[in-house]
Length: 295
Length: 235
Picture 1 (cartoon, rainbow over the protein chains, first blue to last red):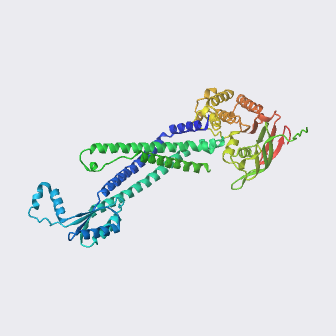
Picture 2: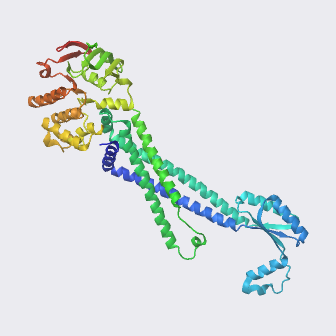
Picture 3: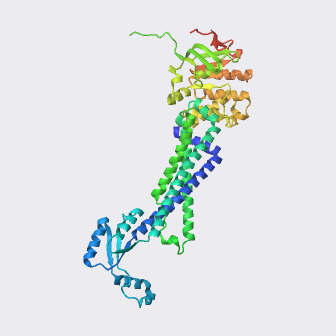
């Protein structure tokens, strides 16, 4: 009989004897993974939404007067002095009128009595995709508002700010639920293993007396922790996937979910969550066993 | 060619000025010095509380001495740790006075545990367990939960576990305390068989019938001190 055969026999025997507490731990690990993965899934999807919105981000600088070609060149230089941009587009008053009329579609008649230069000229600045932080956007907006002849700068401030704050809140929730996952997993697994150790104190003492090595005593418990981590995280992630599919089916019509490409975790993230859970549970078992073996 | 003959017989256990105290100030053993020769059967006798069990616990490293040196197979056992200690313990079979059986496991499982830790193959373990149970008249108890056995039967299971792994040193604490004359004989036959195979056996007992007509060495303890050593070859 080799070492691993003996260890697997021990694991099987222990799982049979302590299946009730093992199930409770499995449930706790699954729930912890589910809570964390749920918030993390929302967070990653919101980050994707943020990226998508960032792609459409443009700052509109309304001007007092329509700039001539020389002034346009000066403004272009001043803008690029602050930061490289993807594109700078000058919109004349007439162009603005045409765009507005186009947007109104069938209702363009309302503009019939209006002069064609009633809208201000503007500059559309499309920043580079690297300009993602709210502070940088704000700073850029403030800089643009100080350009000569500027009336106002617009980029959907309120909406962008709220969205960035929502992302920040979500990241805090993800960190908290991650911490919760780590604490509950380590403590629950360590607690279950400690209960098992107490229940099998006589046997473990005897094993030492008949010459079992520390590895012989410790490895079955660590394998149990590993199994808890593997099964618990798999159950948690499968539950989340089921929930995700249900939500997708339930809200398959036109709705907020269809505005964005709401996706599940990539295999890479799934494997990372499973491996992290396995590590946490194994560490929990190891900690409990170390305390016992130190006696 | 010159032959060098070592005059001293090979020793397996050596105690030099060993003392053991328990708090607050109970002296269980005082300045015990003794040697056990490889392959001999050694009796440790004395009244209850004389220190026999303490001495066996010190030899198998269940407890550490307050003073003195204990060597088993030439190694100071109280300095051993980890794998070396585990390996040495696999070579020492102990039949405890309080049995130390797993009362929720079967008789076979209790005996097998000593062989499992040294990774013996399952067919070998199974054969050895059946063989030992037959020798101790417990064949019909193979799958019985140990907690359901009488004290006499439990005592025999403990002994079977102690000798199962064919250890080189067997420590037996009161092996016949709960047994009738016939079963006592069976137990002694098993121990003698182990001795014939080369094992050293130390028996702590106050059952005079076990050592009265034997020519084995006997050490008597009284109040934690050696009172006398009789029989066999004096060391």
